[in-house]
Amino acid sequence: MRAITISRPGGPEVLTWAEVPDPVPGAGEVLVEVAAGAVNRADLLQRQGFYDPPPGTSPYPGLECAGRIVALGPGVAGWGVGDEVCALLTGGGYAERVAVPAGQLLPVPAGLDAERAAALPEVVCTVWSNLFMTAHLRPAETVLVHGGASGIGTMAIQLAKAVGARVLVTAGSAAKLERCAELGADVLIDYREQDFVAEVRKATDGAGADVVLDIIGAKYLQRNVEALAVNGRLVIIGLQGGVKGELDLNALLRKRAAVIATNLRGRPLAEKAAIVAAVREHVWPLVEAGVVRPVVDRVLPMADAAEAHRVVEAGEQVGKVVLTV
Ligand SMILES: NC(=O)c1ccc[n+]([C@@H]2O[C@H](COP(=O)([O-])OP(=O)(O)OC[C@H]3O[C@@H](n4cnc5c(N)ncnc54)[C@H](OP(=O)(O)O)[C@@H]3O)[C@@H](O)[C@H]2O)c1
Image (cartoon, rainbow, N blue to C red):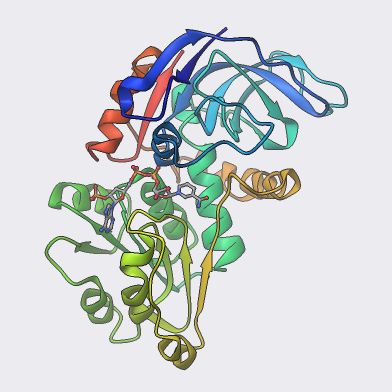
């Protein structure tokens, strides 16, 4: 088969559509013929040599895909050859075929094609697990979503609104904030021109946000805690602004607040399967009802993965960039 290989750590030009050995599904896995995969920011880090795949997993990038099951490994129940699926992957989605643990499969939601379905698993699993299974965001609470126009942000806005939360977002341009508003965001903060702590306070009568979903890390750590409400929960899932920060623990203590950091890719299979099962139960009905939609900015051929990385690196997209085989 062919897959996008990383010839050496570097820029988008190191991504090469090359002939590689076919994956073989192990016990509890299925082989999926990939129709489409989607780009995540983590793929850029993997390409640059900063985010190696966990040992024993596919060396090729790609954390989500949609396609059709073409073979079953030993011990797989509940899925059959020919099933149209999308999947949360530990890697290998930028390829013609990928072996996937059965617990990471989801049916393609009714009414969606493979290109749209491929844009869902990673962002939906990340957002659901962090906002609801980790931060326990409740209806009528307030959540601040940093990077509202990102793949993660566009899904966080929709899921938080779907459960009845109030959503504040940051983004770096008026055009991106407008797209966030179309998805349901209630309060729009241009992080290039406004102080997000002041804006959050203003929008919450001084109370702060109950939950902050953060993708910036160190650079925003102190200000995120300042933006939290009493009993607030800051969930850090991205480190685009660095890994080492300083935190005023007294500020955290006075608010009886929590700082949590999580990552999805490194979780054990059983945890990923539990997240996927929760997504199937709680989010798939919303997708099938059209309440929650994949936000796909553009679709490119898999062989043009380098161009897709250039687009995401430059921040030109809103939502997801999809790659088709
Ligand atoms: N821990 C996990 O399990 C997990 C899983 C998935 C993703 N993630 C992380 O989540 C983040 C988003 O991933 P993605 O694939 O959705 O990325 P993406 O679509 O490339 O989006 C990146 C976003 O970062 C925003 N941004 C940059 N600087 C910012 C700032 N100072 N303040 C607020 N926003 C800023 C950009 O907004 P503008 O363009 O408006 O500037 C852009 O929308 C990444 O950091 C990724 O590593 C973590």
